[in-house]
Image (tube, rainbow, N blue to C red; front, side, top):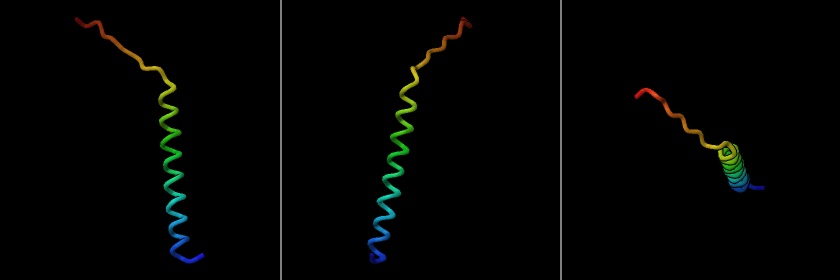
Length: 42
């Protein structure tokens, strides 16, 4: 492999890992239902 191909391969790998981590994080947050809190100060 030439040096240019190696750099491109590494960059694509980093992008794919980053995209997977972002997608995994979004999936974990959406599984929690939203909560509403009301204060009775008035």
